[in-house]
Amino acid sequence: LLTKRRHFSHQFMSEVLVDLLIIQKQIHPEIMGIVDGTVCGDGAGPRTMIPRIKNYLIAGYDQVAVDTVVAKMLGFEPMKLPAIKLAHDEGLGCGDFDQIDIVGEDVSDINWNFNVKRSLVIWGDQMVRKGSLSFLEPLLHNKLFMSLPILGSLIYHDMVWYPTIGKKRISEFMETEWGKLFQTY
Image (cartoon, rainbow, N blue to C red; front, side, top):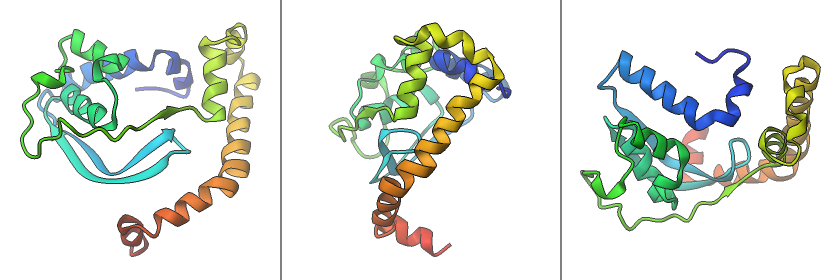
């Protein structure tokens, strides 16, 4: 549904996610959502997160409720997350944790205190899209300029972050139960 111009939707991510949920509900109104929370990512995503072993699977037919439960477990106030609030307000599901019927373990007191951080690349992208560098935003429509963030991401993630930080994180993860299982594949 999102073409090669999908990067233009980044500044409207919550609205895009809600639109996709509307489309999904039209195609498959009773589809189950499952969140694999066996290994969760904490911090600057999506490429530089710290893996945290949590060993949870969260599932349900209400996609908004599933995201709400996960957000609460991560340590966030679900209705302060724009996509959850918008979907809840549009009647697409329940974003109010206290109104969700949870079957299984009581997770109401779980708070992993995860943090939202931004990698250098995401920080730069957000500065151009909606920050103090927003005067540069029209340049995003230029193919040459758009290749610069891609190049910046390549240099930062593949040539700086991965060799200096990422390899160590992966090595530590490989010592966990999930890392050892991964190595058997």
